[in-house]
Length: 351
Image (cartoon, rainbow, N blue to C red; front, side, top):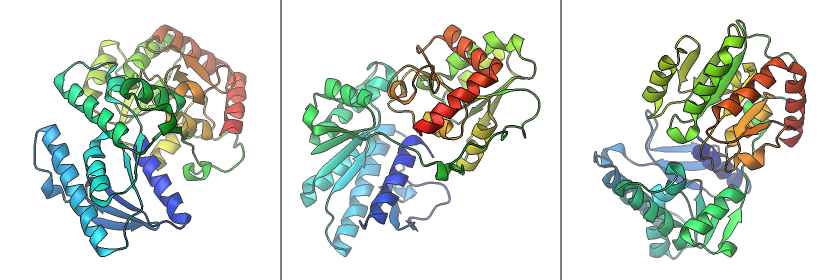
């Protein structure tokens, strides 16, 4: 489950516990029913046979059309909805259509922007998505962002008035990570064969795994048995595997593929340090999750990550794209167990 999906999952369940009737309309997923009742939340998935186009933007149009139809069926069969809450541009057209058809308030949560992901707009597809980003933000009655960084970005890129933007930071519940509310010493003792660096995230350029590979190659000679475990999938995986080979890291870097939450939590609990070297990161909830498992964290000093970690107190922050500085702080954590314990204790207080 990615950051946006986890956000919607937790939010929808919380609203249900408060007495709201919540219907989530979403994309189809493998081997999942068209309808599920999940902890009181009504989950409706688009019929995958409706999404036939190989062209991405046409596929998006088909998705939005199907979502509007599902919402229309629901509106005809139950009491009227009170509002529409949509997450990111991908479903923006459906959200605006429902707002117009049923005269409902539209709340937009913007988790990231096309401009930010690509550090600019460089081609026609990005331009079209950027325009949809802007339309979605400006059509909404209110806009929610998960960090001050994102609020500034949305205001600057799309000229959304500041008074319409609300910052609601993400959080984590240690109970969801299978972690008791006290420090648990020695839980990394089950790992054998040297120390472990762990990353998890979507394998795309903006997550910065290529920077981590460079940093790893610089510290590797000093650590026998050191491994880098890379969790996640994405279109950049082939490039990263090739880079690991070029750097002579093929036998020290393990690409784990998709990890479910239980597997992710186990790797976090076994890791000696978790590293998130993003080039662009609107919030970075994965850093909070790592802090909740009491593993030292090192992050890029960018976006929402900058606000999550206090440098030298509960983790370390490094300039984005600087493998030399990243390698220095990874080495510091690995060779100083007392320092690592101090960082994790302070991080636990924050979580």
